[in-house]
Image (cartoon, rainbow, N blue to C red; front, side, top):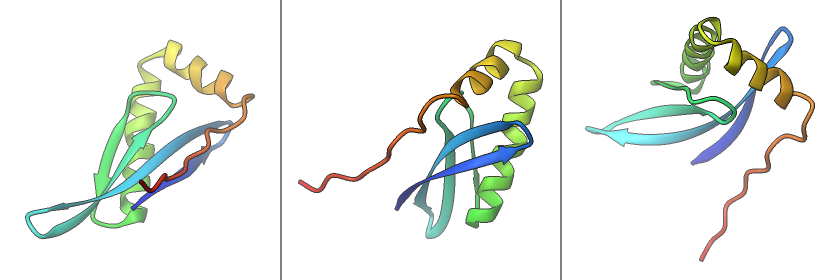
Length: 86
Protein backbone atom coordinates (compact mmCIF):
# COMPACT_ATOMS: atom_id res chain seq x y z
CA UNK A 1 0.00 0.00 0.00
CA UNK A 2 1.32 3.42 -0.91
CA UNK A 3 -0.60 6.63 -0.45
CA UNK A 4 0.21 10.32 -0.45
CA UNK A 5 -0.84 12.65 2.34
CA UNK A 6 -0.39 16.32 3.06
CA UNK A 7 0.56 17.47 6.52
CA UNK A 8 -0.66 21.02 7.08
CA UNK A 9 0.78 22.71 10.14
CA UNK A 10 -0.13 26.36 10.01
CA UNK A 11 1.50 27.92 6.97
CA UNK A 12 3.59 24.91 5.97
CA UNK A 13 2.49 21.88 3.99
CA UNK A 14 4.66 18.76 3.72
CA UNK A 15 3.78 16.14 1.12
CA UNK A 16 4.25 12.66 2.57
CA UNK A 17 4.22 9.18 1.06
CA UNK A 18 3.01 6.39 3.35
CA UNK A 19 3.89 2.75 2.77
CA UNK A 20 3.07 -0.36 4.78
CA UNK A 21 5.95 -2.60 5.80
CA UNK A 22 5.75 -5.97 7.48
CA UNK A 23 8.64 -6.59 9.90
CA UNK A 24 8.76 -9.68 12.12
CA UNK A 25 5.06 -10.24 11.57
CA UNK A 26 4.06 -6.68 12.58
CA UNK A 27 2.63 -4.10 10.20
CA UNK A 28 4.30 -0.69 10.32
CA UNK A 29 3.35 2.47 8.46
CA UNK A 30 6.41 4.28 7.08
CA UNK A 31 6.08 7.99 6.28
CA UNK A 32 8.57 9.75 3.98
CA UNK A 33 8.65 13.46 3.20
CA UNK A 34 8.80 14.45 -0.45
CA UNK A 35 10.19 18.01 -0.32
CA UNK A 36 12.69 17.38 2.47
CA UNK A 37 14.60 14.30 3.55
CA UNK A 38 12.66 13.19 6.60
CA UNK A 39 11.04 9.88 7.54
CA UNK A 40 9.33 8.22 10.47
CA UNK A 41 7.08 5.27 11.24
CA UNK A 42 4.27 4.10 13.48
CA UNK A 43 2.11 1.10 14.24
CA UNK A 44 -0.94 2.99 12.90
CA UNK A 45 -1.42 5.50 10.11
CA UNK A 46 -2.25 8.25 12.59
CA UNK A 47 0.86 7.47 14.65
CA UNK A 48 3.08 7.57 11.54
CA UNK A 49 1.62 10.94 10.50
CA UNK A 50 2.09 12.42 13.99
CA UNK A 51 5.64 11.05 14.17
CA UNK A 52 6.68 12.49 10.80
CA UNK A 53 5.13 15.83 11.72
CA UNK A 54 7.30 15.89 14.86
CA UNK A 55 10.39 14.80 12.91
CA UNK A 56 9.79 17.43 10.21
CA UNK A 57 9.46 20.17 12.83
CA UNK A 58 12.85 19.19 14.29
CA UNK A 59 14.48 19.19 10.83
CA UNK A 60 12.93 22.55 9.92
CA UNK A 61 13.87 24.17 13.25
CA UNK A 62 17.51 23.46 12.45
CA UNK A 63 17.56 24.46 8.78
CA UNK A 64 16.34 27.74 7.32
CA UNK A 65 17.24 26.36 3.86
CA UNK A 66 14.82 23.45 4.25
CA UNK A 67 12.20 25.77 5.71
CA UNK A 68 12.47 27.87 2.56
CA UNK A 69 12.09 24.76 0.37
CA UNK A 70 8.78 23.99 2.10
CA UNK A 71 7.58 27.59 1.71
CA UNK A 72 8.54 27.69 -1.98
CA UNK A 73 6.97 24.31 -2.75
CA UNK A 74 3.66 25.53 -1.37
CA UNK A 75 3.17 27.59 -4.52
CA UNK A 76 3.71 24.69 -6.89
CA UNK A 77 1.31 22.01 -8.04
CA UNK A 78 1.46 19.02 -5.65
CA UNK A 79 3.08 15.83 -6.92
CA UNK A 80 0.96 13.15 -8.49
CA UNK A 81 1.32 9.66 -7.15
CA UNK A 82 0.12 6.70 -9.13
CA UNK A 83 0.76 3.01 -9.48
CA UNK A 84 1.53 1.24 -12.73
CA UNK A 85 0.82 -2.47 -13.02
CA UNK A 86 3.08 -4.39 -15.39
